[in-house]
Every structure is written in structure tokens, then in C-alpha cells.
Length: 296
Image (cartoon, rainbow, N blue to C red; front, side):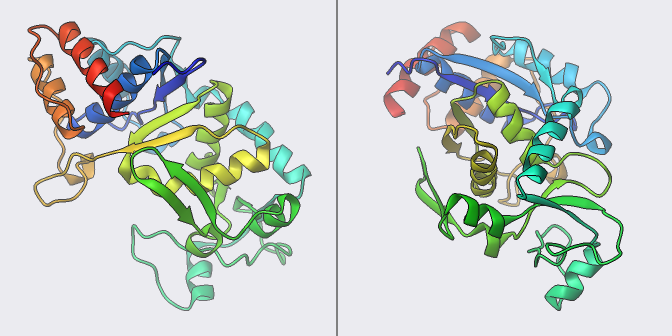
């Protein structure tokens, strides 16, 4: 099925080389773009600079090239986009939809009445909505009650995932007023990805299922900034030996691309596609595009 104006993207973080899980995400987004007769873009999400590994961005681009996955436009680096993120924050501040926050992690835990697990998101109680009360600004947050009132939004943010079906989340209850600019001065992922998706004209987001939970926050930011909402498809994950998502923190090894077709075939299998019958990468990719079009 053709989708006029379709633009998709793959947006890896250069915290290391691609592994089997990230190749599955790259392949899924590429196949979806090709199956819809659209464009496929690559964006390097290096906004979290302390976690980035020197040279990993170039390694990732070389890995994609070896697998026959080439961006249809020049690659975008988030680290070069600070002015665009600042402009978006200033727009939200001017509309009364964002505010500075002086709370530390300990302050938030004290307000909640309990400590939070190391990797568990904290629900922010809105302590600084009415002002900093003499504390210096540490971060900037989206003002969810003001946004709901300004746009007459319901408590739950609903959307449809092309694979998972109807989805819903009460962001205020699950997350609270979430961060747009961090206490260390770096831009938060949620703001950067929304601004960049709009700037690149992204119409379809295809990414791993672990990122499903981010969608409601991104939709709210899109509405706050007056930006379009893409269609979303969250794909199955590659799991590690312990049953958890394969990641660098979970022992994922860099891709062995001595045989790119074998690596791509393993990624295709995770996505519900048959093993490649072609003998070269380009033949296999063409076969999978047709099969993907019938799936989605």
C-alpha cells in the first residue's frame, strides 16, 4: 500500500555499535518505509552526550551501509540542534505550558514519601508549579494541568499502535510533569525527539516495543507545540539470555557483520519474517519488503 508523503526514520543513540536488537529496529523501520513507497531517514540521537561513545556514530552508519540500509537524506545529529530545542522550550514557557523546577531527586522522593528504585521513573508531584520558593532552577518541566486546561484534553492520552492496537496512558499519574531540559543542562529525550520528528517531516514512527511508554508524553508535547502526530508501530524486541530486552547494559555484543545476510536474517526472524531466500543482501531486502507490505 502506497502512502504519499511517507517519511520514516531510524534514530540510534551512539552509545556503542549496533547490536542485534538495534538492527531489528533499523530493519523494521526501513522495510516499512520501502513497503509504503516512502523515504527512510537516519538521525543520530546524541543529545545525551555523557553516554555517547566517541566514533560510535560513524560505526553505526558503516554498519547500516554494510547491511544495505542507507538514509535517503543527509544524516541529522541532535547535538547540532540545541537552538531548535531552546526555541521550543521558549514557546512553551511563553504559553505558560512549562516552568522551571528546583527539585532534586531527594526532594521528589521526600514529596512521594518513599525512595524510588534506581531505574524506575519518578512521578513528579508538581512541587514547583507555583514557583521555586527561593530554590535555583535545576530543570524545566511540562505543565500538564495547564496543558490540559488550555487544549481541553482528557486525563488519558489515547492513541492507536499499528501492531499493539489501542493504547492509553494517564501521563499525570504515571509520570507527572516530565522534564524538558535536564538539571545538567542537557535536553531531555522527549523534547528533542518531538522537535526533530516535526522538523524532518516524520509521518510514521517504527521502533522497538520498549519505547511504547514514551508515546503518550510525545503526543502531549506535539499538541503543546502545535505539531503533527505520526502513526506509531512498536515492533517485537530481541531478548537476552535472561529474558529481558537485549541492550548494551544487558550484555549485548556488537553485530558480527562478517556475514551481513545472516545478521539481517536473524533480525527478520524477530519481526516475523521468513529467512532470506536470496543469496545477496539486496535480494533479501526486496523479498522482505513485499512480505512486510502484506503484514502491515
